Length: 60
Picture 1 (spheres, one colour):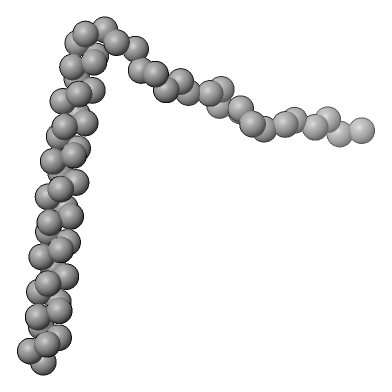
Picture 2 (spheres, rainbow, N blue to C red):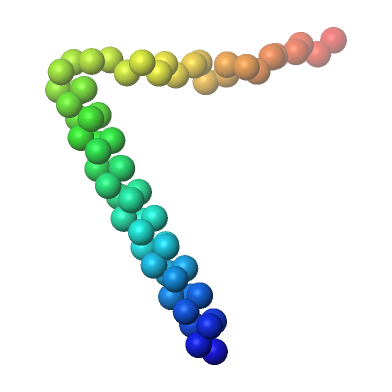
């Protein structure tokens, strides 16, 4: 059971590290986003129309 416990503990440590890394990346993203909004920079990604990519076919 020692090996199984070690593997689970290692996986838990890996998950904690991944979560901490994600939290840091999210903080950096939010800081950059807030700076852009305060500077008046418009987002470069534009949202398409809600029905973009859909074709409407009329029934005959």
